[in-house]
Image 1 (cartoon, rainbow, N blue to C red):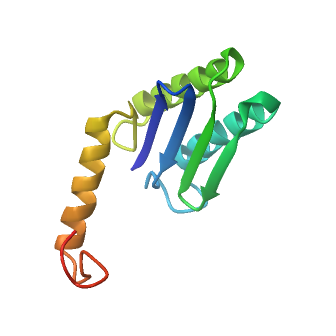
Image 2 (image 1 turned 180 degrees about the vertical axis):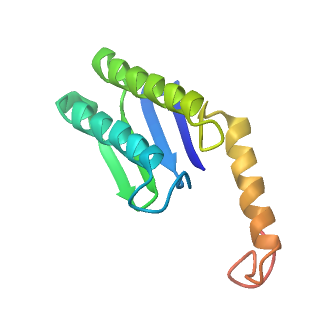
Length: 131
């Protein structure tokens, strides 16, 4: 599943994050993944046109994190990107989720990671102890 989260923080920053793979079709032929990639690429391209945005991007296979300063222009780009992901989530139910990042979302992600590690053979902490 592709998970898209967004946040317009009180510190005047914008965060757009997309992770995962849709699993709608085999790699290289997945139109849902292609749509999500196109939305994130368009956001990067548009935000990059505003020097005041102070854009930072971390992009790799299955993951993209966009951060920038909140301005009226960057907020407009971010809102369009969010609208695109909301539409994609409605069209590809079960393959895409779209939500606003809150502290509850962060806590949920941490809990999932801890549970996954607890159920694996890997230690929770580098020294073998728990987190």
